Amino acid sequence: MKTTGRDFRELLEKHHLKKTDQRLDVLDMLFSKEEAVSQPALESVLGEQINRVTLYRILKTFEEKGIIHRIIDRNGTANYAPCSSACTEHEHHDEHVHFNCTACNKLYCLNDIHIPGFTMPAGFKPDSVNLIISGTCRACNKK
Amino acid sequence: MKTTGRDFRELLEKHHLKKTDQRLDVLDMLFSKEEAVSQPALESVLGEQINRVTLYRILKTFEEKGIIHRIIDRNGTANYAPCSSACTEHEHHDEHVHFNCTACNKLYCLNDIHIPGFTMPAGFKPDSVNLIISGTCRACNKK
DNA sequence: TTAAGTGCAAAATCTTTGCAAATGT
DNA sequence: ACATTTGCAAAGATTTTGCACTTAA
Image 1 (cartoon, each protein chain N blue to C red):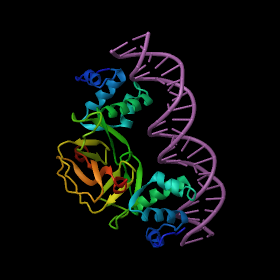
Image 2 (tube, chains in turn orange, blue, cyan, yellow):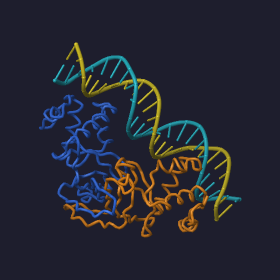
Image 3 (cartoon, chains in turn blue, brown, orange, green):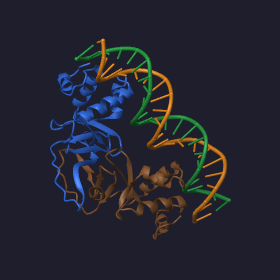
């Protein structure tokens, strides 16, 4: 069940979730990568160990608890990545930029890029900003 | 078939597409609104007149020709809106900001808001930027 | 022990594909 | 007339739901 150095038991405990092997596997996969992981990727890697339906439910639970956040890429596919520590059950703060590679389709979290404020037209009240830059990533540009 | 003042026949002609009633209906609906129209909305309004499969194909064709562009909203649902005149069959230039209302779920094109440039990490080559601001829109804030 | 979590089957959607019939030019 | 476009049926994919079984606490 646990394969990386990190232990996620206390993370689950903090959110009053039971520490099942399936949940630990999902956390293991999501926290071990630099980039966000697509739902299809999660399915193909964890498919042997976790039922597809269970995976849906785990991802939904984690998102509601503020453990991970969902980013829809330019194809409409769901991708998941760990939340910053500022996220709570009630509000997500993931206002960083994402980079979606048009070649390999990977979705990176660019935590260092700052999103500027925008002046909205009268009557529009902004809550959050979602910014995805498409292009070719470091790995693909080397090929 | 044609219900608004505008006639889209020459638009279709320009792109070497046949002027069918179904296509004119879709153009009619997309060009008559300030905001982008979701695929479900298109289906429910045009469902009597246009087969669901045909709608998929029309939207795909229009997008490929650079007549409309697709915006995936925060739920992963496809929305469509007319392209700016700068769009061609080969390249889309729709780098404006979209506003997705969390109450009514409408997706507005905010053509006046400028997207700034971003400094990318080494190795990442950006092609396009997709920026969606979520919040409550003018209409919903009045309620 | 028992509430929470999982797996399976099946339903409900969503999207694509193949082909025959209809339509625009 | 003929290539394009549409509609239907059906396949494929994705997501949700109900319920019985299992497991963590």
